[in-house]
Amino acid sequence: MGLVDGLPMADRADDRDGLRLDRLHVPLGPVLTDWPSGLVLRLTLQGDIVQEAAVEAVGIGEAVGIGEVVENVEAVDQATTPPASRSPFWDEPFLLAAKGVRVSQGDAARRLCAAHLDSLGRFFAVVGWGDLAARARFARDRALAGTSAAELTALVSPVIRRAERSRTLRGLTAGVGVLSGEHARHHGVTGPALVADGDAHARMLVWLEAVGRGAATVDVSEALDATEEAVGPRGRIADGATPASQGLLDVLPCLLDGAEFACARIIVASLDPDLDEIGHVTMARTHHG
Image (tube, rainbow, N blue to C red; front, side, top):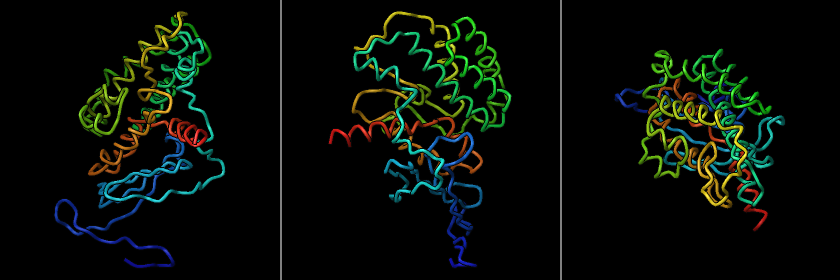
């Protein structure tokens, strides 16, 4: 380990095959296309294998990793708005209902459907399916614009069928980032990632099923039952409770450890943590002291 023109050289360590390979330290984020806003990954690579991973949330103040605590990273781009300064848009209907505001089941389903389409857009883009990503994002925008259940169902049905039936997509994502239900519960993961009980492809299938179900119910006018446990796009939502996305961040280093570098972004996209959730809870706890 040394410096060349002020830059650190890679060091060496034994890899899983007993070979001596360079250890390269690679940061990902916080400003990348099709990447969760405010997320920073710090990876240690040997060859194309992730040996260590640490997660940082810009502007929130928490970091988790494998065997170490990572110091908080400062904002590197003025255009990056700290998640803590924004409200969790995708959770809004459920948070309002919990406060006693009347929210229709259709409005909640619309926001949930749009959130999953937003996640699917990133997921498809990361695996190289630009066309399907564009179609998912168009359907997301139409959902948020208030389109009817019939029109929205007509938009999402071809996306669902194509993604579910694609052998290519299965080949790219099957076996990537396997997260068992037991492991998910241990890390506090709820929502789609827990339901999937499997790999990145399984998590995509759960999103697709939720999109189809949500699109069909966006016109329902009955009020959302505030007494029932609220489950948002990433999982359970409860005032003051640990946000669902925190569980996704906590489990992420474990899924990245030992993964191929090319799969790292697929794993992140298949979890798609929303750092706005964490920022919202952090601000609320700070405000209430």
